[in-house]
Image (tube, rainbow, N blue to C red; front, side, top):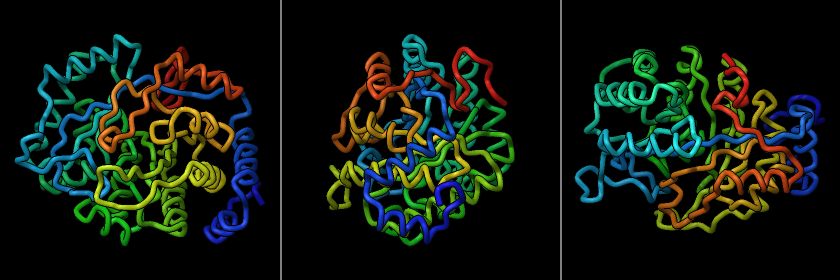
Length: 348
């Protein structure tokens, strides 16, 4: 059954009838067919949150501050440049640039911020914003999505991360993030980006108000868009971290994380790369994930603030990351966002 595409119903059956060890073995076999070389990729980059001001009010977020809050900020150009330069000094060539739905920032702000980064640091790739940020910017500016994304590309945007997906089921979204864009709007941003030539990632945050059928529906919506556009380079699922948030549920177990990671590898037959989430799981469960379907170890995370706001602080210097990958039986290889290897020509 694993050699052909599985349906949503079959995915639910696998989840309910297959234990974590068996599902992991199926996923690892699939991973080795897709990536027969014994390598695991990773990237050296930094998460830069250019603002923490956001009107979304997501129940799961411990990082944001509402407009007018004394702890709200927008990074100055000097602060931004310092963070990018530190990233370069540590061997990074990419920044993940994300903020929030800040009503005080207009299209000119985003274009000038990107232009500043590219002028000062022309070699740095900007993996920036998220579908909710871009959708919010389009609504506030009165521009259509294609125009907004085109202008961001022209200013210096290189790719878009899959943030703000959470669960791509509107009933769940209305509960946990009622002012964030709908499932269809999230997918529309990604579709427009892909049509304009940008590569993006897809993500999922699970373990809060959803059930397994909601998770499988999320996987289906991502797979369906990938069939049409081919623009997703990777899928990254991680578990909700409940500390300091307004959702009072126990954190999903590492067993549940590994089992769902494996299911993701089996269901998403058109996305080549599945990323381990050591940021939420810790380095050793992240290491195990390399035998449960993952072929990528994510980022060294020179800086990370959003998960850290929940009280979860896992740091992983590059030499430790490489040692963990080797300890799992693989050879670590540095990559770019498009999954071309450093030292080789960029794809596209």
